[in-house]
Image (cartoon, rainbow, N blue to C red; front, side):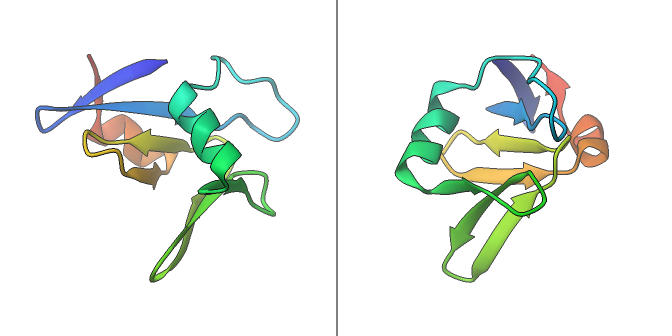
Length: 88
């Protein structure tokens, strides 16, 4: 599981594999738990989504799902992720 730093906050991220491809890394425990609880689910595009009070957010295959220091999840496009985060 990769760790990244953004504005001095440590976050963990997982790259959603492309459709039909094997993931480059093992699914982290936090993501496995969120998938098991239904908090995060597979979407029609083959990526991941999460329901919020104000709607649904998600990502496509090849994008990142990010766990921040507060335990909240967010989604980032691959090109945005690479410019906003650096490996720790």
